[in-house]
Structures are given as C-alpha cells and as structure tokens.
Length: 454
Image (cartoon, rainbow, N blue to C red; front, side, top):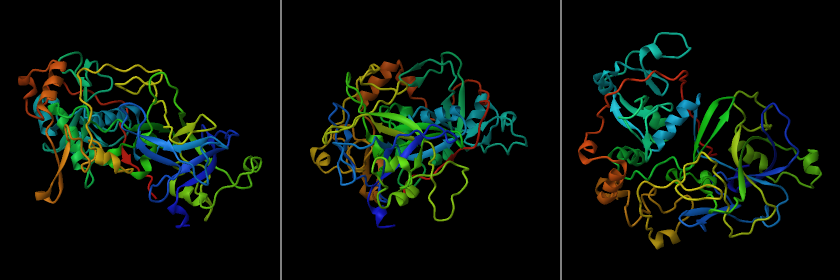
C-alpha cells in the first residue's frame, strides 16, 4: 500500500449534491496526489495568459489520456482548511488574510471607551454578549496586554476605498479578534511562517498593500461542520495545493473547467456504472482515497478494513471538454464575487486606484522553478528583482526579514486614498475613537482542520 501511495492516483467516483440524495449516474475520474503531494497528471509552468505568472497544464500518463477523456475529470481544491460556524466569521478571516485590520491590545480598547472584553472562540466581545444563545458565566476579562485585531464589521456602513475602511464616514462598526488564535487557525502562527504575518502587519503602514494571502482561497459550506475556508496560496508551499494555481482565462475566452461543490462517492469494481464502461479502479485507488479524502463529519465509521464510501463536501474543478491538448493551459471561472484587477472571460476588470509595477523576476529563477517552489514575492528564496519583499539574514541564522516597500509607491497609494502623511504617521495600535459594536448574533468556536497531506 505504501508503494502505491508514492504515485498520484485516478479514482472513479460519482457525485452527490447532498449526502442524503442519491448520486447522479455520471462516472468521474477524481485525480488525487501521491503521498508526497506529486500530481503526475498535472504540471505547473509559466502561464500562457498575460500577467498570470504560473499556471496548470494537463499531462497524459498511462492512466489518463487528456487527448481522449473517457469520463469527466475532477481536480480537488486542497489546502489549509479553517472551519467556522457562521458566514460572518468567515468574512472576517478573509479580511485578515487581505491585511485589512488594525492591531491593538485589549487595554487600548478599554482606554478608548470600549470597556473590558472576554474571549469567545476567536472573538473578543463584551461580557454581556458572551456565548450568544449559550448559557453560563463569561470567562475573566482579557489581560490588558492581550493582542487583538480590529476588523471592519461585515455589516458596517463605513465607506470603503481601495479596501481601506474610512473611520470618519458612516457607522464605525468593528469586530475584535484574538490575534494569536487567528494566526494559529489561519496557519500563520507556525514555525517558518512568521514572515507572512509580518507582511500583513505592514499593510497598516501602506507597505506592500498589493500583496496578501487571500488570492488563492475557496470556501464551501458543509452542513455537518460549518463554513470551510481553503487556502491554497503558494506562500504555504504545500504540494497538494496545485489546483489552486489554475488561472482564469483571458477576456472573451471561455474557461476550460467549471467549479462545483459536491460529495464524491467511491465506486466499487462491481458497480454497474463501471462495468458498463469497461472500467475498474486502478491498483492503489482505495489507498489514495483513504489518504486524501475524509468522510463527512459525524458519519458512521465503515467496517474494519473497508474504506469510507462517501467524502465530505469538496470544491472541485470539473472538465468541460472531451479532449485537452498538452501544453494548453487549464482555466476556470472564479465567480462573480471574486475581486479581480484584470478582465477575464465575461468579467470586467475593477480599475486600480493606483498603478503597481509588475514583479521583475530573475530568468534563472523562472527556469529552475519546480512546483511548489515558484519564484514570486511569496518565496524568500526567489524574490523579484524590483520591490523584493523578503530577504534572508545570514547573520541571524537565515532568518526571513521583511524589506521596506518602495517609498514612491507608498506615497502614490496614500495620495490615491486621500491620506496625508500626518494622519498616516499615527503609531500602530492607536485605536479609533468609535464605539464598540455589538457582537454578531452567533459566534462559535473556530478550529483548524488538518491539511490534506497523507
């Protein structure tokens, strides 16, 4: 079994839109990576789309001929998962990944008239708002030095410009999150990732504000557990997250795959759907299925030695054609809610407030790029020649340090936002003079699920 997991795998499945609903009759080939995260049927290379960096391409193997697909192919969107119990908290975490927050302490909130706060899951709330519908006394107040993140409430009426909330317009309604806990559930608190958190903190100073960790995310609602945020950003360098590198097509072109959300059901070799097509599960398919998929939370465990037959609800990219030419980049439509500064397929570009120069990468780095080590601002070992973000300090044991941004670009951003230097010079952590908002109706404990790495 271990030998079989060393190669990527193709598993035949059918899809279900709901765990309680019968599956449809279409057989799909689900691609799964090897135990090391290798994808033999997919490759990453320089994108054919202008300004897209790197993209994903089909690669035929003995198991799968992209030039003549027998069944539709599914590519799962895998990455670091964070599960929350309401959509409100999901949106707040997305804003943290965008760098749209203000760091401060519980003591600063109290000094600004916000009163004492207590911990409620990932949130810091007034004692009277603790627990929502839950019963029980709230925990002790947070220590004054507890680090918090002030994030704009998802229902706030404040005007936004360039993803920056105006604190002088509309209702200044904000929420407070526990900084250390948030870093943990978003995968930013572990060893070797502190530099990514420092990047987000720099946004307060309008430095590197065009670079964030929310550009390669998907989310799915699972009725068994809640709202799931899946982060496949290349900054995490997780081999299993390759599908997150699939780009949108250029303007006027149709995507070559479509995004769906569904449960997958593993087919047995004796299933009539496989027999009618002359198909059988490849050797090692069941081991790969067990290694890279999970059953719905709370599902009854299968008999000993039998793999679970139904996966949890997943985000999947599904082929829409019967043939794909090798060397032709795979594409997908991210949906109408995705914020893009480029025109794609039927979507118009959102005009940028100010011009940001493109990254100038070293040709040697581009030539030696191998997934998941790709050149870009996110990779400390392959930085842009212009506006580098990270550097390694040999005098500190190779510690990753954050480089200051181009002062001219910072000034350009401030001018576009109408921010004068005096206002922008306020020290970090200075709380705005505004009331503490009421807590959302339901705040539940948040937890991080394990990554899909065998």
